Image 1 (cartoon, rainbow, N blue to C red):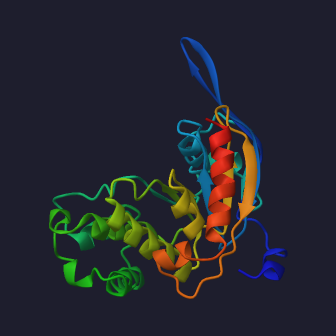
Image 2 (image 1 turned 45 degrees about the vertical axis):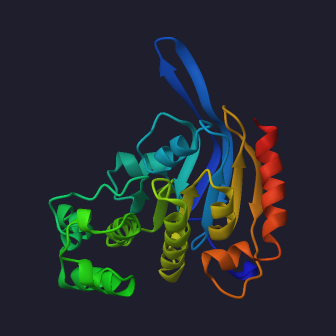
Length: 268
C-alpha cells in the first residue's frame, strides 16, 4: 500500500494503553499491559510473541468477546464500549484455528450460515457467495459435505463463510495451525491473496514467523506476559511473484526473520 495514501487515512482500529487482567479465586494475573497501536484500512497486521503471552486474548478483546479491559479501544472513531452498549453490529469477522464447519450441512449451506442467521439471504449476497466459491476453487464442491474436502479446502470454505458477511475487519487466530506443513504453506498463501484481493483489513495471530513475514504489512512483537509491545516492524518485500515461496525468497526475508527471531528469543 502506498505510504502517502496511508498517512491520510483514518484508522479502522485504535488501541490506546489497553490493559487486561484475569481474575480468579487465587488472585489477579496481568495478561496485557499498555498496548497501543493503530490499524489502517487495507492493512494486514500479524501479531507474534511467546506462547501464552496473550495474543488470542487481544483478539478476543477486539472482537468484543472480552469487555472488562482498561484503556481505550476504538472502531473507526467510536469507542468499542459505546458500540457495544448500543448493540451495534461491529462487522468484524473472526476465523479460528479450526474451520468449525457443520458436518451435516453442504459447503454451500455452511458458507451461507452467517447470512441465514442474520436474515441476509438476498439475491445479491447469494450471488456474491457463489462468486467467491467460483473464484477460489470450491464451486464444484459446493454440494459436498465437509468430510469430503481436504483440510485446506475446508479452511478456504471457512474464510468464504466469514467474507460472505462482508466484514470490515478480519481477525485470524492461528487459522492454519491444524494443517500439515505443505498444506499450511499453500493455504496461507491462498488466504493471504484472497484477503488482499478483497481489500480487507486483517489481524493475524500466529506462532509461525515465516508466515507472519510472508503475509503481513506490519508485525507487532509482544513480550512475555504481561504482554507489552516490544517492537513494530513494517514489512516490505521485493518479490517477483506472490506465491508462498516467492515471499520467502525475497532478499529482505532473512533479515526480517533474524531480527524478529532475536526479539522473540530474548523473551524466552
